[in-house]
Length: 212
Image (cartoon, rainbow, N blue to C red; front, side):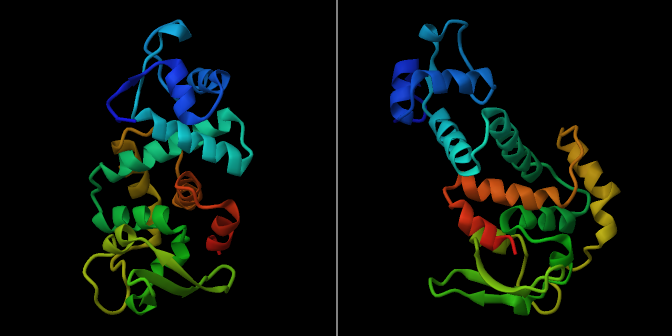
């Protein structure tokens, strides 16, 4: 389906492989926007199919209500807002987005060393770490986008200059600058990672193993 095409309720539901009532429920929970008051007059843009399918995966894998799914999708939207918003402390932005893409705790990001990265069999990147909280040793793949957030490869600490205190007032300031008016702690980025992975199709068992 062309992402710019307009679809009726019938066509949209068919493309989603879901009944009309499910699509109507997405609109009622503000997961999808409506063009008219009456369902028979609704027109959906093709690109909204990806959002509807993401909602279905979240609902299925988390066994979540649509109210909960709406909150999860809002979380994904907020991560995009943060990524598009400049931060007065660039290393804080990089570390925060890295947490969203890897699920690592602030304690593990603070001590992350360049020596912890390895080349994966598929020529991508892996991280081999021992988590500070659980003392669990694990090796897991990371995306090229996450690796690029680390900057120019070197030696020693990856996020040089990052301090735990930055996750307090400076983080709140950046979040407010992004137009997000709610309490978000650095630990919330770990939750964002789980939601992002599920929305991309990773099964919940694998995600639970990745959140060491």
